Image (cartoon, rainbow over all chains, first blue to last red; front, side):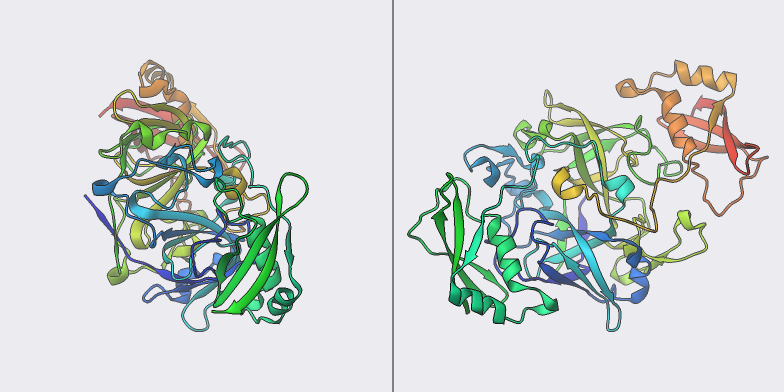
Length: 240
Length: 240
């Protein structure tokens, strides 16, 4: 027996392309997104009392990921965290390529606006712009925050790199008027410090890498940091 | 655009009826359940590495709950926690009566058995026997366990009641051979201490209440505890 999911909301997010999206929510707190509830779910009564929750769970569809359902099941994937050369079972990871393509992210609830339909402003979200949302639930600390849980595969957040801006890119970032009062300089820094490059590639010091946020093309390059790692320099920002 | 969910697993659980199921996972740690993966998902490769996680998220369908999708949307519910006379928005609660009927529970992963298909033994689960599972994901503490999250609606686990057993019921509970080494006496105590009765009812001291676990009918009654609350006495246990 199968079940049908109807989207209850859609998301407006800075992440207009997959490359560069943080690998877990909460890593880029400056990533402010708007969840717009769809009719008939966009009624103020449906979110009454949600202001009592500091954080919410968002269940969504990885709508741009390859199908991995019964007729095309891919039991294992190569997590970027393991350098891309070791396999893990799909149910042992949060990979977007999974049966039913269901995703789960927690975000900080910043604002509830019921003046025209229902819109929720959240921060720290890691979703692609336009992602279909299939449920919103309150985060319940006594049930969800497990002090004694452990995960030896992903014990802590990935290490971060230092990020600098070339003068012209710094000026462009400061001048850009991002929605919801987002500080673009801080957002770019949070995202690039996660090192979006697949971990199994050595960075190519000659290459210009790029991510897209909003309507922007943002280019950067790697530089040795003098301690066996790299730092990132943002070299160029322009409207697409 | 709608999406289709295929169950990837089913659950064998002590909870054969809805009444008595704890209101959140983790409240009855002795509730041991088995997740049986369904073909073609029941391959050992699909759970390789899952043993690195102490806990897992289980996404499931509230398959016995009334429909609340677009054509029949119920925007608000009366949470038992609020005494049943105040309304909250469905997205501000974990109510099973919700659009898409998607549920989310965390459980402790006790054992992975890949000797014949794939079965996962978990504890602390709050799911009805036969619940369709649509995803299994590792719990990732650095992303999921939010030390600074708060929820003023459900700030802490509900208060518990003391539970005693009449002599014959105590003997029956001790003699019963529950699956997976479950201690039935402890399981009944954990469940009834949550006070399964709707909070807006005063307990009827003359009435025999009942829950079902496995193939058992378990009856109990309320007694004043002498401190403006009640304790529960298990009076009768028999096979249905």
